[in-house]
Length: 119
Image 1 (cartoon, rainbow, N blue to C red):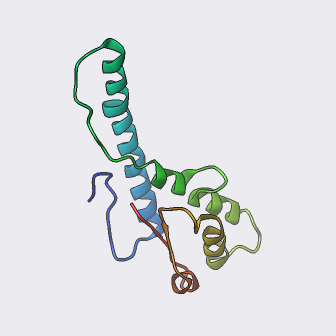
Image 2: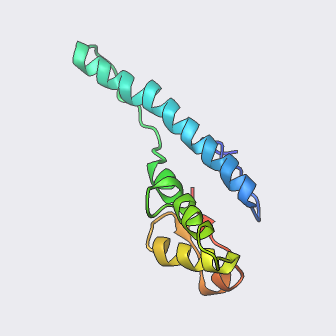
């Protein structure tokens, strides 16, 4: 398990992607409230403190959940089509996400219906 609760396996299923996504979203909420908002409050109140560096997982969340371009949105869109297959979903995901810095995939993986999320 990494800091965001993302379990790293050789191969993940859709269910594991959903679990990892929820863990990423929960960690983002925690970071936002504990680090970002508290530090902003300290600045407003003039409290002396040392800035705390922490990783930001927003790019991963955007890749998974962003409206119109996120993996879940693409899956939802593909499920509404009458001729959707696993491969059409993968093809659309590559077409939409291949330039995203957190999206990992090759032509070989695409042919096998696979891609990865770098977290």
